[in-house]
Length: 210
Image: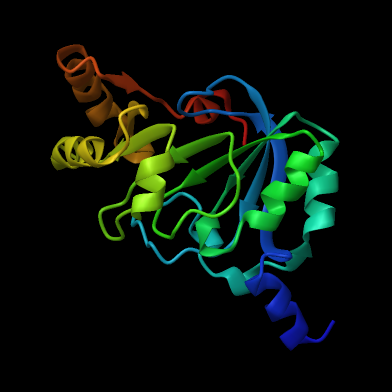
């Protein structure tokens, strides 16, 4: 394909900039401890300074990959496929989720919600960021709100986001990894005093798995 044709395919979600894909254990949030196949899509302009996959930001570094290849690889390993990034909603997720659903896969997304929701999802994990707040479509449909706690002010942000997300979303507070020693005790105390929240940890990092 010519470069222009490839870009057209990417724009309509028929190809996606694939950074990496791997079978592992979900380490965070509601589905912690469960097996899943992760598909990491390149491209993100949210720009979190503590992001642990900054190499995902520039979509041009990651090869546009046909959906059939992504779906075939994912279907070999797991019933659950987690689409993450980067920011996957930068791209139209309609065709990817459709093809995964045709293979009877449960399809989850991890998103900042910075772009309007596309695709059909069994589980939407919204992890909002201050510098590019979620769109209403993601607030309305999120199954899980996971707020990263980097400093004490993030508890205020978490409560602001809890007011905006739909009433059925399950609420999690998760320490930012580099601040975990400092923030985890504060999160434990906060959850005990505000039991609508739950604690999420990056257990995959403790387990030394992807």
